[in-house]
Image 1 (cartoon, one colour):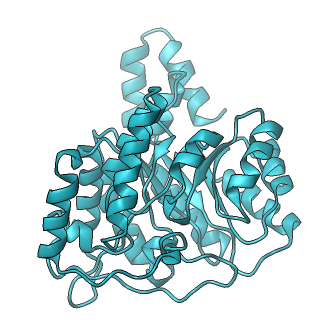
Image 2: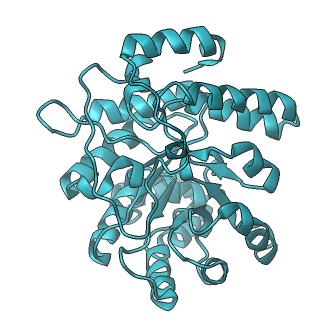
Length: 349
């Protein structure tokens, strides 16, 4: 009998509360709060859909991971009613992080998010399955709401990718995101959906997601939830097409969340206007850097990031905005002035 079944039996038995607490204290029922929720027949009440920005990895002047900066991004998302937060992924320069940094960073994020409404998704990709398992189990034990994994670097064979994701999907009882990249086909995603019970969300950055979503939705009965990436520069088209979520940078995540909520309340023109504000300000400000968060007072002056080397076959995180001519670099004071002038009433975080 697994742990959930054991707890159900104990709770339903005579003298249930006293016996359950005794067994819990004796260590016979040692598992996470997320498992306890499932033991009572439910799932996490946090929404696994909506705006899930990719967190920046923040560093101090001496190149130490800035745990306060990670926690500050989570608190920012909670204040701004942002639906989720994901770390570490490509935009987090995850390949520059040591295992010690990743564990400490995940703990800082999950601690900062306790009691909040923002769902927290921890990235578990790594060069080997043993490391992936450590990250996944640590995320589950510390209260993550879901896990996410990029595919292994340099692997293009879809049978191997399927086997990889099947192994990852068995590591925890948490909802499981996969990120598609390169040439990962719709056929592969559908087979993953069919054979991996935990896999119900995909951040799709393979090919042209806008031309793939209808086939994905049709072949999975709308049950595989598709999230966008590529800077979320086509959010209105994405929402019209049935995307369930969007993964922008953290910088203006509160405004992205407002646009999402308006659209899904049926206020489409208002959502259009809200997203238009993001598009307009992004022609002036660097949303793909930490400068906006510093200007907004979320991160401290002097906060740094690391630059990861490009991964073959994987688009850089600023793929969408990079299509525009670069704007002149602005100081943090200039960014603050622009934000106050053009977005003041809409900055809720």
